[in-house]
Length: 140
Image (cartoon, rainbow, N blue to C red; front, side, top):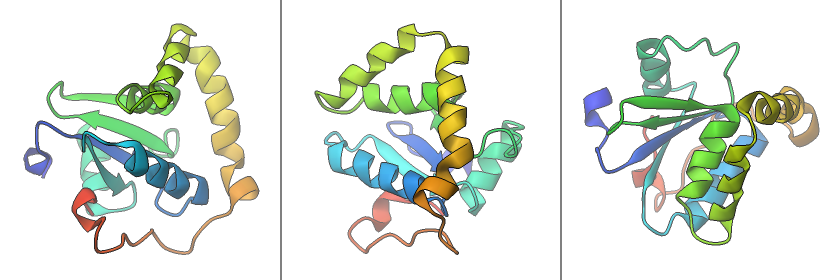
């Protein structure tokens, strides 16, 4: 299944029932003018395959993971979000400047938001179902 991901793409794994995560996915899709990203919910088969392959504890990392097939590398939490931002158009790509802040500081803020995301933004009963025109961007 990992070999099915095109090498010219990167895969964003997200919490499919989180309203904030779903909004973030739509934010990226709108700004992904180079068509660089694919998406998969952590709860789906692709998400489970990648988390098992890389031995990721989804109890500790449950909101965003970026998988780069060309580098065979995984990015977590704030680093994943900023690596995504870096590949989007201006001015969003300027957010990558925050990569100079040590990850433990960035992730402290990230974890605080992630811990409260359901309370602040709500939660769906099931993963988002993409519209027909966006379906090609999603792996389930």
